[in-house]
Image (cartoon, rainbow, N blue to C red; front, side, top):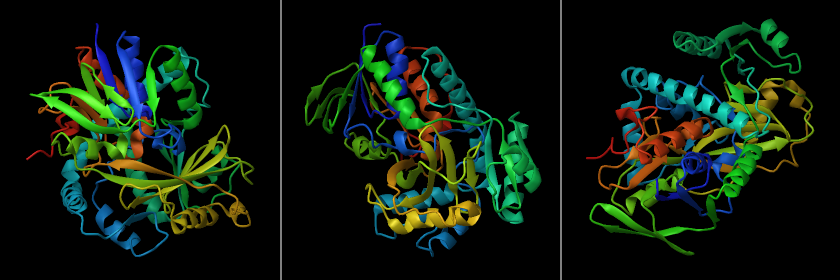
Length: 417
């Protein structure tokens, strides 16, 4: 098939799309506004997590979020401001936070996460990428019985879909991972989940694609989009113009700005998350964990122990708020006493922007307004998990294949008036 495709965005979604198109013999160019090492695909927690079946917009999250907003170091924060986009997003988020909407989303997220995990495992094996991938599971560590009770409800949902999940007592948790003494009432174990070191995967994946002929242009910013009729004819950047048969926007939290140039409305807010690595950790966990009360992810990686957390909606910026970073540190000290006397002064905090849709489901596919445009964004905390399946679906559409997953809940136009 003699087609040219230009992709905006060289994170895991953009590169996965390029991978599948390149395998089919398509000429692919990816353009990326950054230097390539500071998007969300590098500093995240590295989870490949079918356990994450509940979308961000769910019952109870609004009231919990309002409580958290009163604390400067809490896991969740929305900066109050008079922004039409933010107000609209908040209203749509509230509408989506119902039992009915969540029940409709769960099977879609199940299909996306499980298929994406399988694709990761195929890529790792076929391409011989060594990124520290492990799949003995993920612990949800609960300090209180109340939190444990809520997590056990998620176990029941996971079990209904055939996913390996179980509730563990304190003693059972310590037996499963004797390397960490958590302050806890108990935990939930998701044996279905895996993890890896994302920056190591990205570096090898990128090198593989370049070797196979995919062109990746960094520090290339899309400035204008030329349209004739219902087709894009050109992407104009700070480094020249790009012409192709098909165009894809997979630019994470920057995607709505680009879509607006085409009069396409995809409600989305950047949810800033922070992470940092500890090279000489006082503990060496066998398993990654989520410290449930603080919403902190801890992941044993090839280059040390990574800690990640917070959801801060303050616009498109990478400013680091040390109150948020200190909130992560305080939560870690509370949940893992071995860190109480650890010196965190030398950590190098990283910030990334998760693209969050109002209903917690990504935008994947074509907009009806333009024949040769697809969008793949809005994965929130599941961006790393869902990279391969998103790329596969976008490539299947271009190649004229039956889509691996089809659902109106993923429609790019679902909020169109």
